[in-house]
Image (cartoon, rainbow, N blue to C red; front, side, top):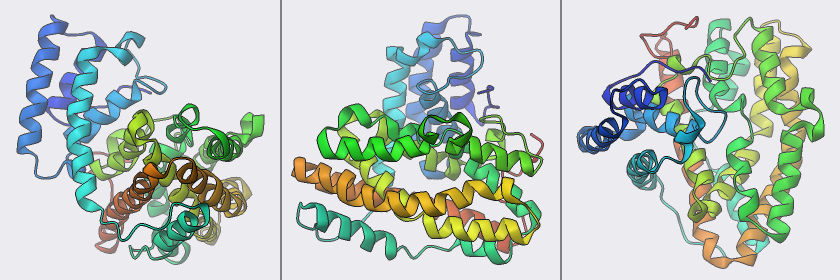
Length: 344
């Protein structure tokens, strides 16, 4: 990923450090820890803090495909890991404040699956998919793809971290889902590749992170949540719950997204990504609910609350992003960062 533009003192220093352009790296790392501590004490809301969300996103990206100019050794630098943990702790606390769980179901596969379907079915946030199907303009479709591209161009990767942390039935179910996400061995069928083709059909840059500078903090938070869950073994239940909720809320929205793109004259190459998910995720939601999430809880009932927290957290933060986008569109303005253009 190309190096993004900083959004404040913390992200600027993170980017400077990993690019190796500081005179004294150790001094810069010590300064970064103090700077993060001060920023966390001053931020109004970390979920909407552009500087802190970008800093966390970049630190996570060191564990994925990396950032141009950043050496591979930074991935496990203990000072950067401490800074990441500072940001993670505040981020996780804020997300937990956003989530309220009801009475826990029995720790059985069927009960867990039923509760996940109840949670996803009762999600009362605004429907961006219905808006896209009926009302979105061509410009808004482009913005929609910008927001989605931050995850979809590396689709499935955050959840794949969970594979070595599971066993038995839940592990097999996760591998089955992820195999589909990665195209069952066919590079052109990888869901990230299908999404990239949609972007190209709309004349957009399909390079991973090409529109990162244009995406607001809450979109980064949606993505950072997946990395938080996926990269911390203690949250393995949460990443499983997150993926289950993601699969359970995918099929029908993608049907509507496809309808919206078709309404504005786009053809099969642009629609295939969405059409693929209508069919695939209708199957995945059953596997995810019963075998992956339910199977995990049956094997380790201690993870029941974590699984449901992961699902609820994903729904809650995604709703905040949707509210941000829909409020902007209904007000007749862009949902992207005001200082950036679609060409950035």
